[in-house]
Length: 144
Image 1 (tube, rainbow, N blue to C red):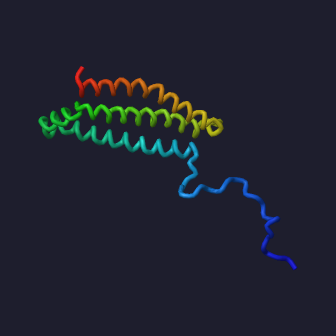
Image 2: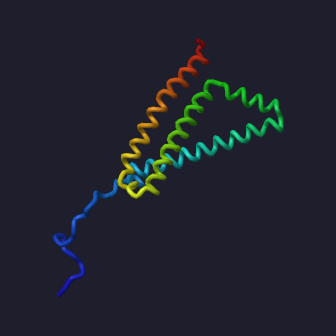
Image 3: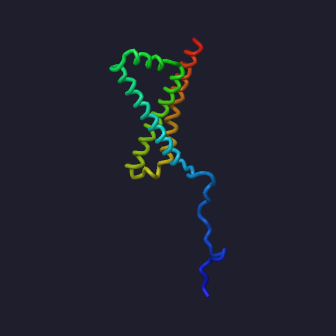
């Protein structure tokens, strides 16, 4: 008589490791680049939105515009400027990588090395910018 249940010896072994508990995604490098690309895109969008609004203030109230521009000169805003630069740089470089993956026949084969190239280029450009901007903020706070 045939049985519909398989014995333990007949069950094939699982080819991949079981999913880690407590995480919705597996955390592959591609997923994190996707998340970072979306976050930096949203941050850039909100910057552009605020920029259009504060520029439009010139027509409504020049005094209010001057007040807003004065707040942008505060040393804390230099840190926001650094964050904006970091977001725009990563989003731009990763966007080029995404286009290469989509439109280049070998793009999917080289997507991880391209991501590491994006990270390396980002670090090469953001580290000197961070040093410059942070030293400017420190100079403005403590004098110099």
